[in-house]
Length: 197
Image (cartoon, rainbow, N blue to C red):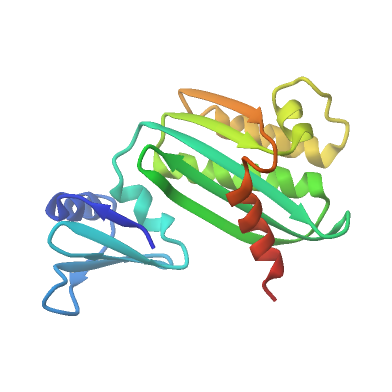
């Protein structure tokens, strides 16, 4: 549940300019409420709390655009192919600013890794970062995207094109392989999604 400390009147203006409808608060402590998609922002005196299944729907509008973030991604498949899931985390100097996970149906490990990278890049784009440093524990995906390995599989080649299209939205980006221990939070989120029935 993201908490954004800010000028809530300026945040209200930003939401209204984005076409988000604002309602009165439900209690004496709530200044106002705004809903978009599966997310609700509740404003207090000096902060906004975002609730719901997809807080990114509102958080991207409320946070100041620009800046730099570290993005971690991981995909997991039980069986190859088998039930698969993704996890991603966005970290700045303020700590974790966004994370997510999801089951993606049946996929190979490499397909799941690409889907996780795509979801992470979409989230970083929606948050409005100018510069991202992306890290994942799939050496194959990292080296394919960087052009160090060929991509012979047509499905993976298509996903690599999608990744490059998303990366082109950023002023600056890097992509590097890291050991699984460094990627623990994204790995944990992917496995958490797989464990859910």
